[in-house]
Image (cartoon, rainbow, N blue to C red; front, side, top):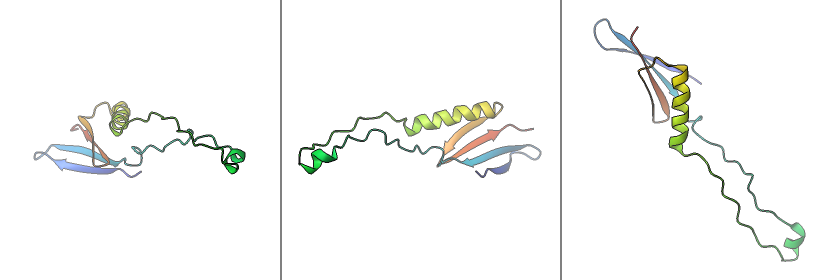
Amino acid sequence: MKAFLLSLMLTGSACAETLVIPVQDLLFEIPQFTNAPQFNLGGALQGQWTPETPKRTDRPTQRQLEKKLINMLWDEYPDAESIRIWHGSVIIRLPNE
């Protein structure tokens, strides 16, 4: 994962750092296909098979995944001024040094 470091000039001598990290791949949840219906081949060949409705599995929302990622980043960067997700990238604003 590449991280981009930007230096933003605020005043003549003050400089703040901002990390911009692409995280779209971290926010994508791969579905778990463990709820497939049972299939009886013998019954299907004799015309006695009726499909079952698969059980529904609860998956976290995009917002929940973003909050979890932001909380993990706060542990990594406790002195950050702000941590936000914008258009698939996390933006970490670090304090002036």
